[in-house]
Image (cartoon, rainbow, N blue to C red; front, side):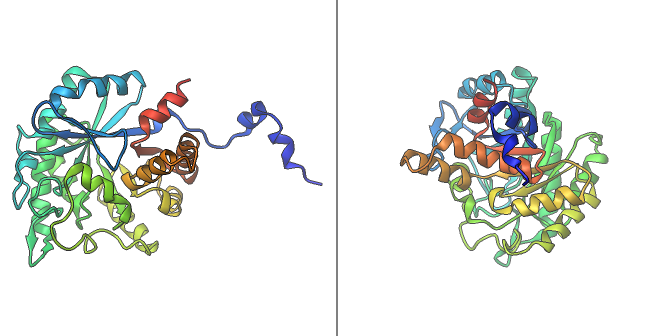
Length: 320
């Protein structure tokens, strides 16, 4: 008889034969930076996650550094919005200020910037609106402006998230032609039009004022199209390919891992975080164990990088 249980008898042997292990080195921690002062407000739908103004964010960054989390992903919340999101390429905008502040005071942190428009536009969509939809090619021009502004401020990596066709080619081209050929791109290659983004829209004030994002984000039913999107981004010069959300799309994470010889990231999004927190608060689950099991499933599926709001909590466990 085959007795696979022999290798499960003690914790020590389970550790020896464990196929996948989480590390703090896997994590990217998202941060919401709001323009203004004296701001440190918890996001009701994301317990434990806050929006910070730059004058109140040091305690959060100190903890991130102390926990040895290597990287952060920045989202900006501006004081002023307009139809094009012009604050995204304002060299003195909130993200640009945040990059400079963190580079000066926390040089060990690797700064990734989200490159999009939904937090900055008055309509909440990810680009320029023509005929009640986002116009792809005119939006690419503005993406290039935003990317260069982030690069000049000192970003270590840019992460275009809007799902416009040709984004990575446009970003790689403008970076290379502007002296930033060494700046890497993490592409939101496979970003589904998901109901799991709900709490993020509260966090970033980015809910669309009309319609939805189904004309540019992917249909959750499509697997082959996900591979096509990833292939386009790979061929256009992406350095890292991302799947978003994570938990409902682990099959896509594995597909990308099998197909591409480069790092694969996944985004453990706000709705996934909120569900665990809500059920744990009700006493229906052990929140800590579910958190670690979920993160391990992402690693097992093939993710090299996990963007997660759980980064600090998980790091405290892993650092013990």
